[in-house]
Image 1 (cartoon, rainbow, N blue to C red):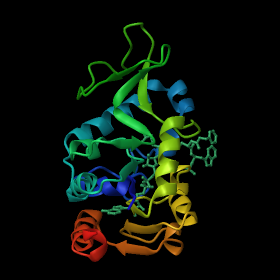
Image 2: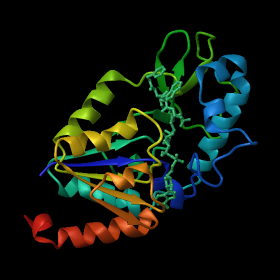
Image 3: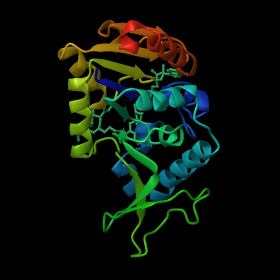
Image 4: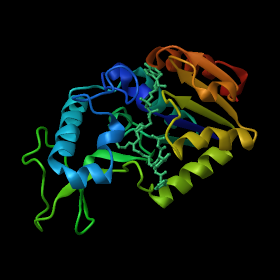
Length: 235
Ligand code: BV8
């Protein structure tokens, strides 16, 4: 039984991390699409870094919630399990998930714009804004911006997991950003079962096998407990 989970910003909502498109998804009246681009960074690296520095401070004060913890328990229980996340907040790792396919990178890694080298950095607040590499070049957040391609090996692994999944759980995503939003369709195309967890219906709801409405920190632990005591889960 191959199980995969795809998460979006909604899985971190109850930890206090603002989602992108729901209430609170704005920062100084900017939309993510305005700031999460290479052009915005070229035009005003300080403004873009102020947004990321603010997000790092918000996330550093948040704790993983019961949905993150349930997904970490699933990884321990299911021999064939893959977690794919669109999130960059690192809360899955802090909840104990050990293998995380991070489609869009991480707030906690910086990348030199000249040499391309990556450095882990958990300074809150950042020592300098914008931060610079020892070589003098600007450091950028090591995230995938709109219009940038995802890391090929990460996307390939995520597509393979979606293709092989007998069961895919889609947790807290508006499914508006591609290629992540295509993963559930790959599972459906390969006759896997897809269960969506969200507080509202999305365009995916018409295609998936089941949509469970409610906050993921409540619905996912409840679903997991019922699944574990079902014949399927005990098998
Ligand atoms: C690519 C990292 C090839 C940065 C992010 C036109 C021009 C150029 C490109 C495009 C275009 N049209 C389409 C594209 C492709 C584009 C795209 O999809 N754009 C969208 C906006 C239409 N994609 C890309 O550019 C990708 N690259 O395709 O490369 C290419 C190259 C060049 C040109 C074309 C193609 C790169 C996409 C990666 C962008 N980076 N993040 C950062 O974080 O700063 S995306 C960003 O959105 C986050 O990663 C976020 O996770 C992601 C998706 O959003 P969600 O996670 O779904 O969050 P959202 O707020 O939307 O929804 C939250 C959901 O949770 C809601 O449904 C809500 O109801 C629910 N919820 C709330 N509370 C709860 C809950 N659910 C459960 N419980 C709760 N308590």
